[in-house]
Image (cartoon, rainbow, N blue to C red; front, side):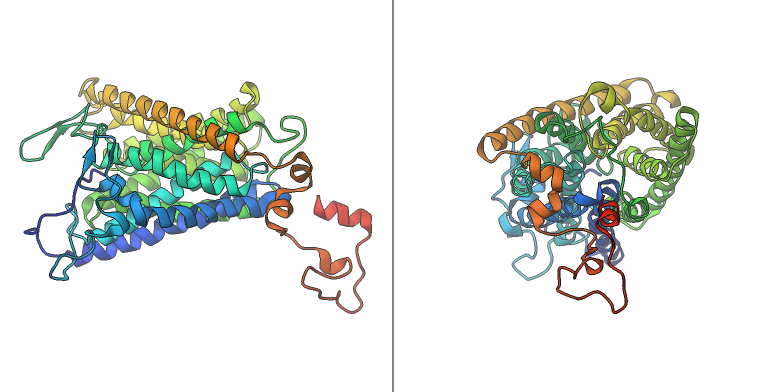
Length: 462
């Protein structure tokens, strides 16, 4: 994905097929955020499932509003500011990006689709990136602080990185590491087709910073913190996989052969990653788990995201199986290194994002080292990945420290032990009150039913 500007007035007419496809892809990517809520929610403990899901829905609300106001302008607006971001006021509220003076839709420079469709598509990318970070913070942070962080972080970190990589900034082919011919043809440059740096390295690094600064959950490493609903997580993984075809194939902005190749590569890498993860689990632990299969699928999806248009199907299988095995090993590092990345945002998104981005330099069919094309692409990919890591780490640290001083991050210890769902939302994910004296809605137990003893009620609510 390499997007630069609005189309000129003399651009070709609207491509209805491409427009329909990108609208569909945008809807698929939007579905990924509720899918992520299910994926993360099932991996959490029962007393914090709603808060975990609300962090995704909260990010959707905050980022969706901000993207319309200044996010699109900062990412893809016409007025570049130092190659780092675009003027947030040039297209504020999408003014000047929808219709021209004749009332006709302004077309984007790629795909001949309306700019409004492209903006909607990109909005969903911003939302899911912020939502991904929440998995590093489950059980313990104030919902209000999370909402403020979402708005500030997407403005100061996501939008600039999106501009640098996709909007013609310093990390694009027009920037530090690329070369573009006079006619606009890219001779060489960084490759990030659908978000290895902008989405996954970005979210994974932010998750690591926050996990370190916010601190561990009470009892981390001492008491079991097992997923409370594995089928919910499996359902969420399935929805993420389904939506990811919009994420990757939609980034072509056209219904063409490249989109078809991207679909195949995305599927191949994901399937191989499942097997890679399960193989490591079987060899290390003696069991291949459902959570491992779901996490392996996500690891493969993450890794292939930046590379999906640059690899062959065989290369995608290689990228995927390595991603699955690598991430299966990486998720255990939090116990050895002592940081509490609750739902493995670092072990999956940062690690697979780095591997997928750097692996392009090895496996890209037109420029990869394994295809005899030398080290240039590998060097470019590595440099861009490291810059993205450094930029996100520094900016996220500043934002997190300011919010810690102004609002505070942690809920009280008593609330964390009792359960963040009740403390922050006055709700519970599973209401068993109807069998113990009436539900929260005041209904009486069914006639002839036997209320649970206090002993069994405690077992159910554990």
